[in-house]
Image (tube, rainbow, N blue to C red; front, side, top):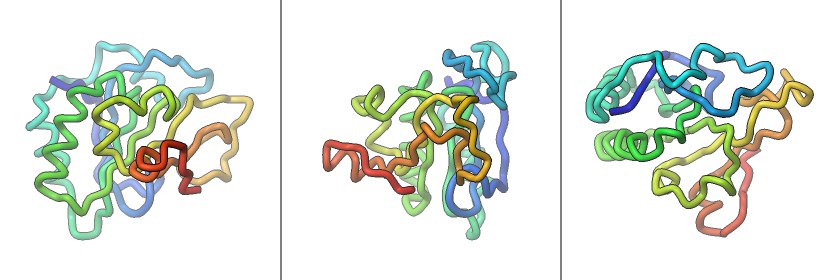
Length: 161
C-alpha cells in the first residue's frame, strides 16, 4: 500500500512539460516554510495499492503530458512501494519521464532500488533562508535538479539546471 494525499492532473510547475503529480503523504523533514504542511503527518491521505495508484495516474495522462511527478510529503519514505508504482507506469508508458521531489540528498538515497527508475530527482530540504522564487522547479537554491540515470552511471551528481 502507498499513501497518497492528492493528485493534480495538469501541472507545469512540478517538472518539465505538462505533468500529472501525485502528492504522497508523510514527511519527516519538517522544513520551516513548507508549502505542504498538511502532508507532513504519516496519517492522512488515502491508502492505495500500487496497481491502483499507477492506474489512476496513467488514466490522467494525455498525449500532451510529458511525465509524472511524485512530490509530497516525502515520497522516498515510501521507496519500496513507490518502486512498484513506477515500475507499473514504466511498463505501460515507458516514454513518460518520472520526477521525484525529495528532502533527502541524492547522496543519501542513491542506493535505493527506486532510483534506477527515476529520471529526475529534485533533492535537498527546502531552506527558507535560501528561498528564491525565480528558480524553476524548486523553492530554495540549495535544491538540485539531478539527471538520475547519468548520475548513477557516472558515480557523481549530474545537474540538469
